[in-house]
Length: 281
Length: 318
Image 1 (cartoon, rainbow over the protein chains, first blue to last red):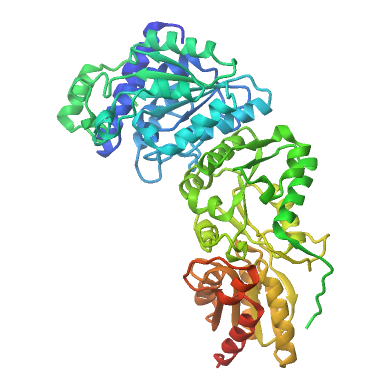
Image 2 (image 1 turned 45 degrees about the horizontal axis):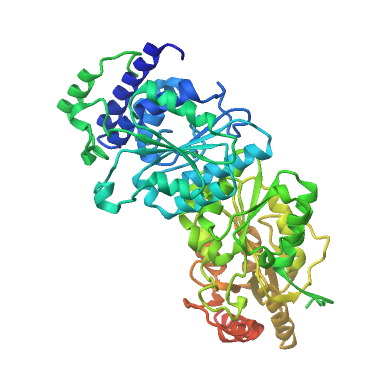
């Protein structure tokens, strides 16, 4: 996707998908999903090299693992609009017998998903295994992950961060959705993690910030810079400074919309702010 | 009673180590992971011969389970190694989400199961692991009975697609199964045909059951002795056929009766063929420090306990 307008259109359409999916079943997580919309749209369409046909082993292509599985709406929307499965299937989100479970799973065979996530803190470990497999397979493609910043309170992350630094897993780019919010309030109030950059660096990572985490150009530039840092003996961490709920004014910058669906009027307002581009599902 | 003899005693964990070493030579997709316990898990031979296919994780079992799940995505067959306690209870959620629910082809290999770990005491003696693992949908649960069977099981699970929990232990016990036995997942092994009582045993309690069978024979009691090495999926047909013949059952395992083999057999019989049943198992308790033999005796896991329960269950027959 080389056209900037096309990517921008995708972002707006994905926002529409997110709020419509969550509104329909009156459940799901719009805030974090909207905050990561530009990132995932750019990642899948500008940064990662992926094959058209989905194969679990992912040999010869880049891989992505979503560790904070609750932002499934944005993941499902981006995957379907990349062509992994029909966009019409987004209408089954969180419904009985759907492949689009509340949190992503391989259990129902949904193309594009390689691991279940939802119980937090597990994605980086899985990505490390996939990265080790790539090294064994002499596959030079990269492994990408996304984590919530609050999610880093889970101890397993630090086992994984330690391993990645110690074992020089330099084919991994882990991005932290650095929005400073979690369910019970700001991350500072709930469990201040201090200087994340210094922490990752102390564990042997190369760290870079993307200050404008909702700006497509900044994301693409930052992720290309991250890619350039791979293969040099260090795992790479991207601190992606995002605004929760980005693109829907009343959802922005607050943790209130972490796991809450808009009502009919709110949906109308959200959709009016994001006019249809690629066609609703 | 069929006669069983042995010439050598060995720990079942060494059977795992030997099986893993053989897999290292025959299957280049097999990789091994360990959380800082390679001597205890007898992994040295595999590591020496396949250093590039071994991952030292450090003391970080949760990370180990996730890395194992990730390795399957690239087409590998990971064998994780640590104590049974740290292979299950410590990492239950990681196994549940990243391995079982995700349907990943990980082999969770667990040593030092049960009280016979000995002097280290209850913090390390898990008696709940079979229950934890068998409750996970899609998980295969295997607890072999001696060195040879453990080696054969280790090799067999590499060819099985799907998550497996393989449980073995620390104490040296007689090698009484043939070295060339074929290991069939989910298939019971008949050790002695009998008519008065069915003794169903798993792990090294199979040897205790055989010894009990000899004493019972002297008392004129004919015991049918069946080895259930695969607790899940359970060989229902073998169990029902035998229970129908003898009319009563004793189950034997080094595990809590809640959640163990006995509970699986009880559930099967209750729904298909109600039959008097007695448990040789630990009775909802933690273990403690001591020698394996002392602990087997104190927690009612030895052949004398099996004899007692066999006579009790026979008396309950109508």
